[in-house]
Length: 145
Image 1 (cartoon, rainbow, N blue to C red):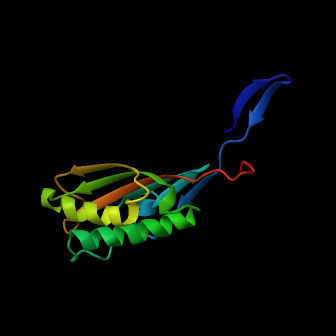
Image 2: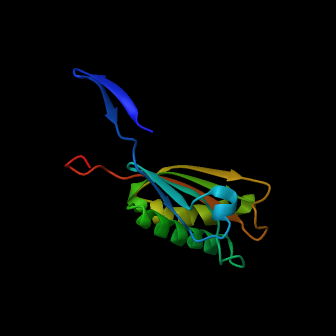
């Protein structure tokens, strides 16, 4: 689907920004209909990411695992933690806020994206104590691409 705009020569067609779906390899992606991350133009949205493979870790360990998964997804989209402008952290135990926050600060202490931390009743896997979403904006190059 193209967008249209009116210029001096009449109506011109503007191509729709290209979409790139990044898989995390989950067998549930096609069943549920989601991607680990989606890049449209210079924006990357990383889906809620749980600590897959770190079920028995404490909150800090689970958070580090999430950052490893998110880092891979961001890289596949052409982004890095430096490009992250927003995070959302979902905790199942309010007492974990400081441990999760400290790990978040290890990665984002200098970058300082807009961040939200919420306590929720539960996550899909009962062993998960934290799930994190990230949004990134990749700076345009000096040539405008």
